[in-house]
Image (cartoon, rainbow, N blue to C red; front, side, top):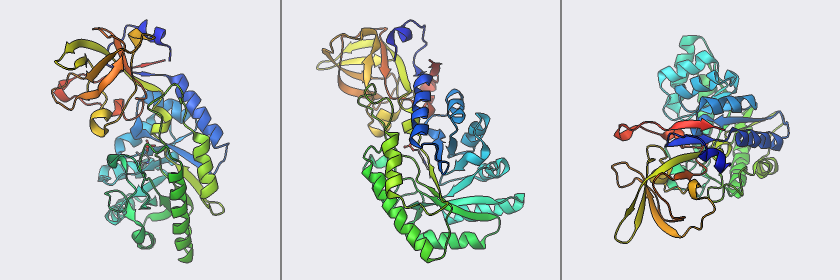
Length: 382
Ligand SMILES: *Cc1c(COP(=O)(O)O)cnc(C)c1O
């Protein structure tokens, strides 16, 4: 990050600042980690950041797309992702979204319930198409992250319970215009402990044994996303450990001959290349605290209010100055949850200073809202 270059620009804040060079380096590291293995397919999870400028770079790097809505499918195809590389997940796929996906000829529906499977079959029959489906199975592996981002446990709105896996596959064999192509898993997000992915692999191996005993052939295994990123020290870890991540699957997952491995990383690809920039509007002295009131609020970056997430906060206008002051860093929105951090040590800060929230490229801008009829944050690219 080049602070001087940032400060020399006339930035309208709040805005997102994207380092496209870092994004390209990250994608190169990911591609190096999969070592040109043609049976490893990486689908970028578009929900992490759907900026067309970033999507184009990710498509150029040869990734596919993991989408969770019709809007994302459209955005991915417009950005240059081949339709066959698109996988479509989500517990509540609406008719128009299923139709759009069938029309576009996407690679795979990741199906999350039996009623959804029936609906996809009906629409595919109507349209004279065949839907390739994978079943999203809940492997009951605890991702040990925040409860709001843990998805792989049995009692969860996502996916199909393990016990229902074989009946679901059997049902797909009896329905017209759907073909069973694989299994899909996604156990949660922000996972830095690779052993958790190892446990997922072991569970998948068990499930594969069950399917083989039933005489069921499975062409595709999709292990989902969830690889974490380092929010505490982005400058030390700008690029995630893709090698360790890939090696975990190489080591623990027993792929059958010809089986294709799919992954759906989102956060790990885009988190570090983006930050939210805002300006200090006021420094307000309370009785016991002082507040740094910013022009950015949870409408621009909701993760702290939503998940108690921590982003490294830096005063770019006072770079190199000792952090001697303690602030509650807050936004302007009329909700008491509009607090980014409390008790943050920063250099003495004043009105007009540029404050950066680092590691905000994933689940940042894409979650922005206009609550309070605020303007959406803009975006600047380096
Ligand atoms: C959100 C999501 C992902 C991406 O998760 P990250 O933690 O951003 O890697 C992948 N697959 C599915 C099905 C998802 O819902």
